[in-house]
Image (cartoon, rainbow, N blue to C red; front, side, top):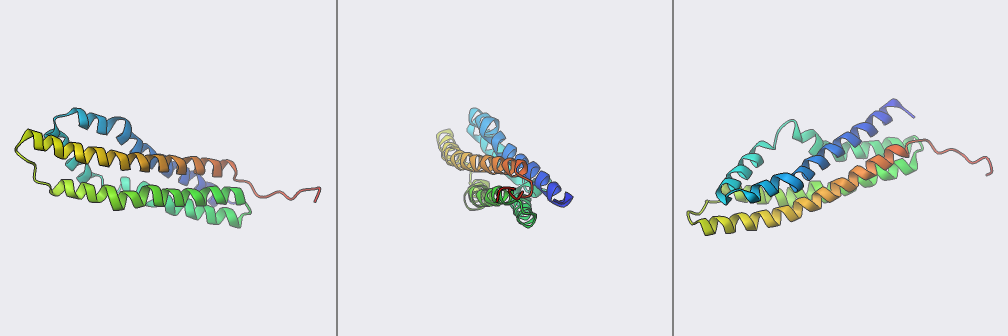
Length: 171
């Protein structure tokens, strides 16, 4: 087993943990805080946060996670660590479909629509705009949080299973 494999496995665990934590923070604090704020303030804050999230700190965890998990799976299979390879490979797929794809096809378009929305002058209309956005956005964020959590669990299992297949003496 190479140090590259171990290093990639640890990097995959860290990246997956980072992105899971990012999505989880939105679930358990950020969106609740925004929902408690006046809707016009919540909309402005969400627009500002969405505009700032595309950066060099966020990108490695968001885009790099499935790449590192898949690379770890490939190296693990080459090292004879089939169970580990299966965990890392499954984690890459779960994250790619359940978090990356959901973000790109649902959350990002919702964020872009909110960014270009004209904020109504009527407080009732502003509240309706925010509630519609927040309810739907939170549903999809909870899904990607769960999927990222599953990917994190799979990366942890893969790391624990990272040992070469040992031939049986009784075979």
